[in-house]
Every structure is written in C-alpha cells, then in structure tokens.
Amino acid sequence: MAGVISEYLELAHTVDQDEFVGRHPHPVLLRRRDSATTDPRSEYRSTLKMKVDMESRQVRVEPLPPSPLDQVLVLCKSESNSFANKVLLGRTETNDVVIPHLAVSKHHAFFRRDQDARRYTITDTGSTNGTKLNGQIIPPREPRYIGDGDQVSFGDAAFTFYSPEGLYDLLRSLSALR
Image (spheres, helix red, strand yellow):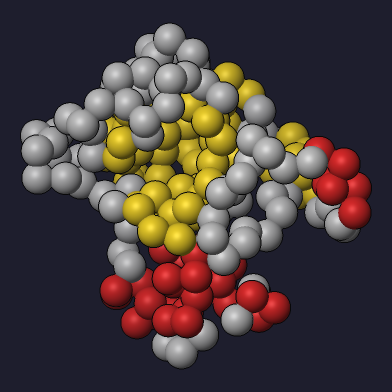
C-alpha cells in the first residue's frame, strides 16, 4: 500500500497516539516525491540536525521533514506472501512492498519485527545493488536493527523508516504543513 503524507496528517492532529497506531499499525518508508530533482544546494538553506547513535558510535544527519506529497510505503504483509514473519521488499509483484525501480532487485530485502526487543530489523537478501542503512552497507543475510528516522537505500532508491509511533510523532511535529 502506498499513499502520501497529507493523507495521514489530518488524522495525526485529531487523535491520540494509541488511536493513530490502532488505525495504522505498520511501519512505513517515506520517499521524497522529487528526490531526483531536488537542488542539493537547498540543503544548506535549512538547519541540519545531527544525531548520535550511542550503540554504533556513529553521527548522522537527521532527515529533512517530509512535504505533504512525499510518498508513504506501508510495510505490511500481502496475502500472497507465505513467509509469516517477514515483510518482503523488491521490484516484482510477488513482494509485500513493491518498488518498481531498476536498482531494486526482484527480492531485495525484508523487514521483521523483533518481538523481544520491540524493534524492527532489516535484512538484505543478497541483492545485486545492496542495501544501506544510514549510509553503511548491510552485509547480505545479516539483520540490522532499524529505527525512526533511519535512512535506508535499496540500490540508489532512498527512503526514511518510521515505526507507527514514530510516524505519529513526526506528523504531530509538522504543524506547518497542516
């Protein structure tokens, strides 16, 4: 399933987090509508925020806020996928999440919820063009935890990950877009 930020924005500003998550219980990937045509110099016209990941001891630039027309891809199971605990992502229609992009492999990666840690993982399946998490290549078949605001790329198709709670918090912070 795909949509745009504006479809979620009104609900996030009219209900509490529990109700929002009840209606949208799956994590999402956000993709800038015009990421290929964005002028890279515009990055310097805004304030950049840095985030330190104490676990990995890495510093990264926080993603810029989304626009109302940025794409939202919902990471949920389709009826055709027989892998009960994996959300498959790739270029072909047999995946739960389809990204029709030449740099994305037929079966590129998958997401899984780690019930014990109450977090999500991403695993590259050995794709041709690789998967990056916050700019770092993920070795094939080695799961990595992924959290709110993390940048993930499948080949050169770039996205930002949000859990249902993280998406709600992001949308609530976007009062200027209402």
